[in-house]
Image: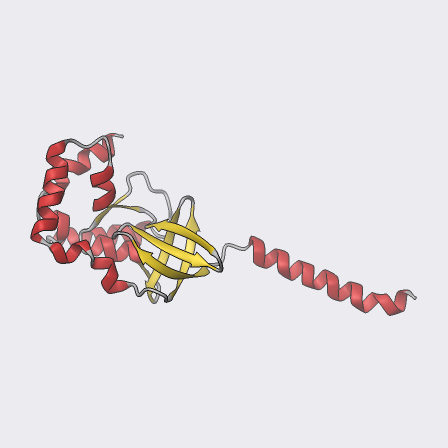
Length: 176
C-alpha cells in the first residue's frame, strides 16, 4: 500500500517545495501598466489587483510639490519649471506604454520598475532632472546607479538642476 502512495507523496512534497520557493523568493513580478498618474506615480495591475507604484529611491518633482513642509516660493518655482518645460510633465509617457507588461521589484512601499533592459524608471527620472535621490537611502544594489544618474543630470544642467529649484526646495528634504 505504501509503495502505491509513495510516488504521489513524493510528487506532492516536491510541488510544495517548489511553490514555497516561488512564493517567498524576491524575484521581480510582471505587472501590466494601466495608468500613468504622473512622473512619480503609475498604476499597475496583476490579475484583478490594482495598485499604485511610486518610483523607488527617488523623490520626484510632483512629490516635492505635494510636500506640506515646502513653502510657497518652492511650489511656485516648480510650477514655473513645468510652464517652461511642459514636455517634461509627461516624460514617463514617453518611456512607458499603457497595457504593456513591466518587471517590478517591490522595495518597501515603493516599486523599482524596469523600463529599458536593466535600467529602471528611477534612473531615467534622475537622468532627466525630474527627481532627486532620497537622502539616507541605503541600498547597496542601486545606490551607485542612482548617484551616477543624478550626477549626470547635474553635470548637463538638466531639469531641476538647470532651474535652481534645488537650492529652494531640496534643502527642506534633507532637514526632515
